[in-house]
Image (cartoon, rainbow, N blue to C red):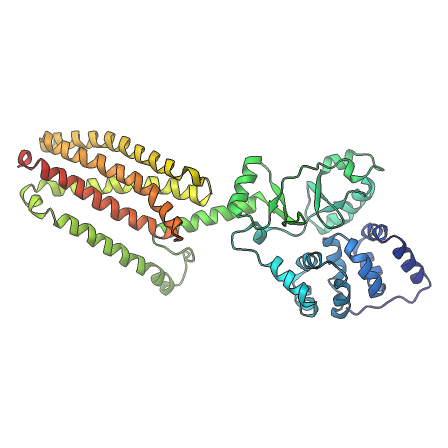
Length: 439
């Protein structure tokens, strides 16, 4: 939209009043509907809009400049501090941003690129830039009037955020407190100054955990200088955390996080086949271990009956440990200084569950085959296997992550190999030791 300055005797007077007190002029402009403010704003020359724009709230300023012609926009934003101008760009509608950004100064483009591109999984990627902000020196009645005018254009809000002239967050106001306050009092007199915030580069899983501890449904997002950038809701963070867990589960079983139920056949095949070949290689490794005890199995054929029992119990026990640790890693519930304690705990659980399961399995084998020694052999093998299953289920994903690998992608396959090999070696090894009593 081309700027069409109004040829009116009031325009010079209006310019003089604005220059006399620019912050007051900005507050007065914010107090009128956006459509009317936009007409006034577009009627002013570039040097006056350049004066008033830095004092407007960013969301409101974006609404006024979104239809500005590129030449005027370029002139106006040059007068703004680069980071603030980049924050203004973040709040523009996509079509306005695509139209105006190519004409912006290079320094502003660099700042905008830095602000607009946040790492995958960060709070900045999912935050909403449309929020309700007030200035501390505004009167309560003016703030309420502004909120009423903005209500049809925005979703209902339970809180308003108080920012200073540099858009730094200084407080938060509950709507109930605002409605019950003295109309003539300043907004800052009823705000709460101790505001919980989230850094824009914070991992979304960590943010979800922090919000969960405090039972907040939303939180403001700030940059390193405490400038307010947006808000993020707990439901967004929870959804993101659930998606991350779901992807981890897919990777645990050799699937791709990109694959969906109705992904193309060839795509699914390409994603699954490599890991099936890896699993096949580990299965042959377990088979090789069994072949080392071929003579013993040939003499005591009943041992072959119990091999799947030992392998199955070890795999299930390891999977339990792996699932708990993987969830802890995904949700950032495991501090670095407690990693070894977690492995020890899972090892103790493995010994305990192995002992109980081994006694039950040994008794069943004794009554079934009529051999107490066979029951002892399979019971001891169960204790050893479940101990290693617990330790491996905890240690493997931790080691994979420390090496920079994706623990969800390969932990399950490695764990299956470990439990199979250890289970077979333990069970058949004890069988060799007690061979004279089993024949």
